[in-house]
Length: 345
Ligand SMILES: Nc1nc2c(ncn2[C@@H]2O[C@H](COP(=O)(O)OP(=O)(O)O)[C@@H](O)[C@H]2O)c(=O)[nH]1
Ligand SMILES: [Mg+2]
Ligand SMILES: [Zn+2]
Image (cartoon, rainbow, N blue to C red; front, side):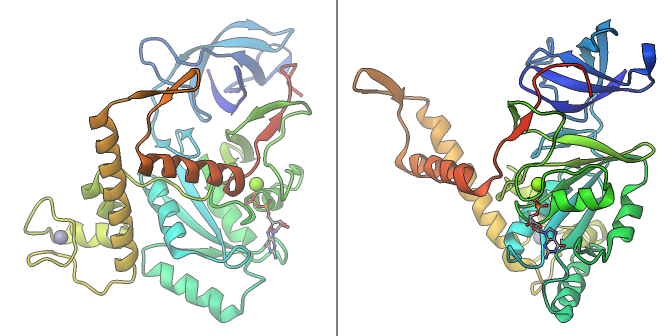
């Protein structure tokens, strides 16, 4: 038994629950892209049984996957017990809508969510206070932190040292890798470029890697991305806002499918801080759902282009996919480089 701590193209590293022959704790395992009848893909964080162990070579194969307790969708990490959303107070400028989308993805795991404001050395102290106070009204207990001055590091280390699996997520460039380095100086993750390093080499991955920071406590650094997806069910959105969740637990709306936009009989009084952000997310989610419906209704058409067949795209979809490509080209961090398969080092 063990846990997948890093994924490579066709392999994964599995950290064993208890050391095997010669004290080996980590095995390089082959994996099928999909496991058995379930069709599930292995994620970082998955608990697995390994088989066919070759202790001398440090190799094995993933035999089966244990049921997941939770799943963070992006970055894909299974069995997360805490999600840490990291946004910078400056450089890059804090965008409340982007922060909200990260918080929603985090809340969707059903696990405790921590909010970290990084680069607290950059803005005026009043601005730090203002963001902390504001997000407290959202239902969070934020930590303002600076790896430059050391502010807030002990507070965060304490929260992350409990047994479990915490994932750092947030936009690129906010200081996630710097933060993990500061919590674990011996790590030396590459700052300002890519996170994660097992050995040198040219295997690429877009996946996450897990690092122990205290006994039983793992923290995942993840490659940044800038626009997390929204849930697909509009009625589920409100429950991902802690300030609404709390009110709705006490009083329910007159209509069970209420989208809480201030209609008569709605339990949510207008004028709350994230109301505009909530409505923006709701509008984006409905637009995405409409696009999806249109796509599936039309079906996957093909068109002839030169000698090739290529998928026929709705012009709006085409724009969307160009936007995605741009986002991938500029917004996301570069691919991580990982080692070629070899003995664990
Ligand atoms: N001023 C300041 N800069 C920071 C801080 N933490 C990280 N940085 C800088 O922010 C940039 C991005 O950091 P990195 O850790 O790679 O961010 P990541 O993309 O979220 O992993 C680097 O140039 C860091 O030196 C901080 O606390 N204060
Ligand atoms: Mg990084
Ligand atoms: Zn309502």
